[in-house]
Image 1 (cartoon, rainbow, N blue to C red):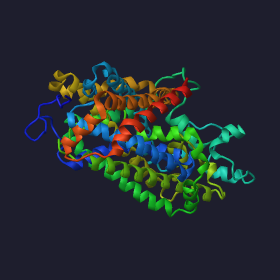
Image 2 (tube, one colour):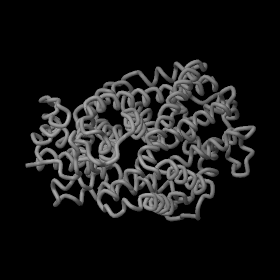
Image 3 (spheres, rainbow, N blue to C red):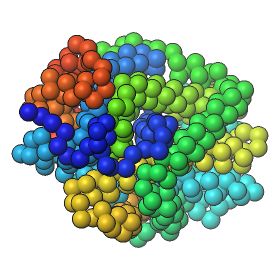
Image 4 (cartoon, rainbow, N blue to C red):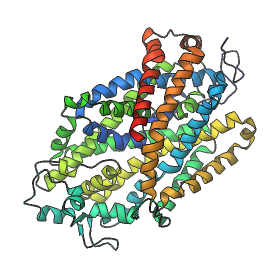
Length: 509
């Protein structure tokens, strides 16, 4: 008969494992983990690319049928067994390799994506100069093709409104925006190709080192200190975001951008690629598929009500991402107004360019530009740092749970993990680092997360048994789970995840 065999329990069902100091520590940690940098800079981009408000239809569908059921499973099973993702596969030792795959994927993620926290630190540092360097063409790294926003406004009076400022180099082959040169030539020092590493970028390497030092200082004492740190790293950036929303909405032309952000285009929901985007985002939206939820849930009290957790966190996460979209598109509308154009789409950019080319130009055009630039990149950094220190703590705790002898040297294990991750990630700090980051993101991390999530549901639903899992949760919480949860665990979640994985794999081959 299935049972909670991993840890000794006291008379109340709680384990001898250390637990969260308070429920709020846990909720802030969970919110901070899911409210990471990936969600922040990808949500507005995916929202606009996939039909505006119409994208909410596939996104909410996949969050309800895939994201939340998987989220509930990870938190509930971790709370029931008081263990992390490797020990979860004790219920099916033959598939334990999936757990190691999840740990490997998490390790690659930590090695590569840490640079996303280095870039905000560099922009924050540059924000304290008397003039924002990305608004100028007089820097040492600028080329003769450089053009500032002011020069662009004066030299493109005859260009149509659908002309894209951020595609000047490609379309006209004669000028490069100053913000693009700052990011590519000064921050990335981008090499011509993926095989031309060109040595390390000093600023990125040092910023990366600062990130790991801060991560170590936050997590080496365990979840007690980490839980308190998340109060600041979760609440303060939300406060900054609300201030930024109010300020950007008052900028001239802001409503032009917001209108473009919100206008639905229902034609997009007929596109199968949109549904794939929604499925992938549903996975990352709640931090599933890499073991972090197993780590966070394993420190809960045995009787904790997981039903409340799986409802509160997605709502908070969505609201924060949606508000960030309002801030971004308000800034794009403001840029359109400043340049005297009727269309804001000429300033639209995608992915990393959104945060580090489009936004800097808008911030530079605002009154008190240095202050708002510093505030924006402090917010981006804090929204990402809790995601990182929770993932590093997840890696350390997972290894210590699986190899109990490491528990006696936990601080040493934490230090070794941070040092090893830093040096392993130096490839991404090279001048070809952005190429490698995009390669790993497209060909490894996305479809690996889909595979891990799908196999988690297969193990739970078809090997361990959906009925046993629901009974365990009922014994643990005293609450009966409805038929809808049974349907999602048995059918919609595993089948949709497998379908998305196969489709994504077919696109990458």
